[in-house]
Length: 473
Image (tube, rainbow, N blue to C red; front, side, top):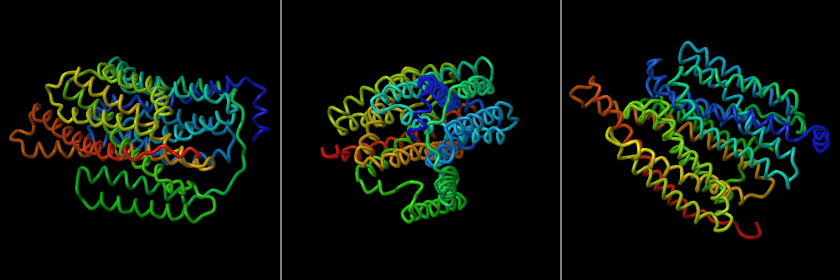
């Protein structure tokens, strides 16, 4: 690999980094554009919230499955091949979404987009590590963090403006020129900096991972709406595949993911915390636009503007939380953050048709204020427990859990909201009235936020047990 890096030194590293950042920004921006469009897509395609949420759930699920696979693919293909393939998949999926005549084609396009994003994000991180020496990686990773921060900040407001001015298809039309520019720029400046060793591909583990996570997510989505055998059967089948996956990873010499990382108690504790936290976070950010547009009757642009301060504050405070973590350790940073998250969800549990925009803004800012002091410090605390050679596996596991848990959370809680709304209408004297339909959504959302509040309290208890690693670690 050192030889390849030296060959890459023939050009400016900054140009290579720029190529990666352009592609990453396009991918991250796209991931944050669609949530604001879900209410309109429900009306246009005549789909329920439980069905339309698969545009987000399916996207995240595919990324989650691809994260551990990407590390293997990078040993089979060059940096240029990986980047070009990822962006080509992303552009193809985006074009399909933009021209989609119906929900099925739109969902297919989102899945293809996710294949590109799932390859691109780990590739970017690993290429930066290969391209820069340790003493210069901080600045490069800081630029990557800036891209990660800016996309969710401008995404909701930008998507709202586009939807109100044009229509949802322009969310995809807008992305295509930037993606094509990223491909052209990378073709000119991106060089190969990773080593191609072509290790053995464990296709069985990949199939088990895909089937396991896919079935479990589908099962949770189905059972939260209808308590039938189909949903429970899917969960059972998915769980069986995941158990077989774990057994196989412990037996083979070159596992897809080295599960020995779970022998570290703090790493395992943080993994549980991540699962619950991501379920709550992604479900909340998906459901809030539905509430704000269908109950409070806000435009898509107004919804995006109202959600911007929380996302902006989250990005601004991440470096602060990192410094506090270094100074005081994990517990004194994470526990107050979890407390703020719990308070925010308790306040959201009281929303109704008379809730003011200011209250929604305050609750959302409080939620993301708490998140800024929990997500990265918790992951850092877990990874700090691992020996150096296991850190890549720990990172891949955390990234996979984030995406898969987020997808399951969206599927589960949107289903719970729909089930609560249907239950309200079943007991209503006039279920077809507009007012009653609005009240049914409020009832479903209140149920969701109460459950999320209970989960947040449980996570808060877990936070007390996250410890600082011994000095010799």
